[in-house]
Image (cartoon, rainbow over all chains, first blue to last red; front, side):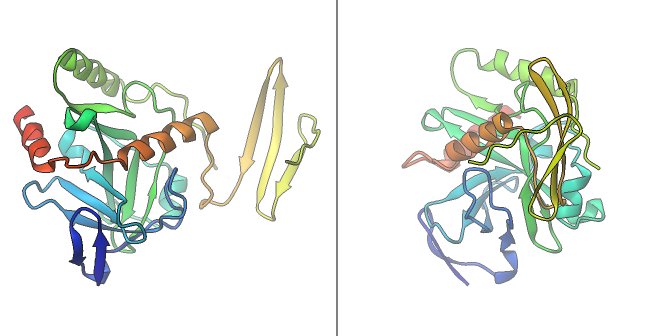
Length: 169
Length: 78
């Protein structure tokens, strides 16, 4: 199928690559259909291109490649909603935010995208309180205080989530 | 907007499947239980707002952004 994108022009994408977000995404409730476009130079990075809005594309990355030792626990309710029954069916992506014209890149580890890879169904899963640097985990910060910021966020990640989990039965 | 008065232990239904119960009222805090189908995501609004804003910002890619350059810089880090 032909996909119109603002960034790459019109590109041909296999229909089966389309990922459905039945519940949209916070901030983009009407955007349901996206297709990942792998970055040719970097296997860890992809553009998640909206099929409905040519100008809407997120940069996503495999969070486990970005952060060594990262653990992500997907709530039971989200797994059920996505009909994920085994870890082999699940893929996790973090949305990257590019700020200051590319001088700063952060990864959203607080609300990763979880994909059922066999059913091509996905949802942005909010993992409790987005505190401790997980919402804007710094990957790249040119200039001052970059190192300090990175260290802090790492420490916060190590202590796992200090938040009280909302139980859902 | 609909406003309803409820006491601790009382509930309200939103549609046929969503039940919101006032569990406890203590001072200026109210503990609320939500029973909803799995497909319905339930979050504190301020948390949802943060994610919404971050998504909004992530969707704005600077014009003329050289993604290759950024990826190169990220590679340097490792």
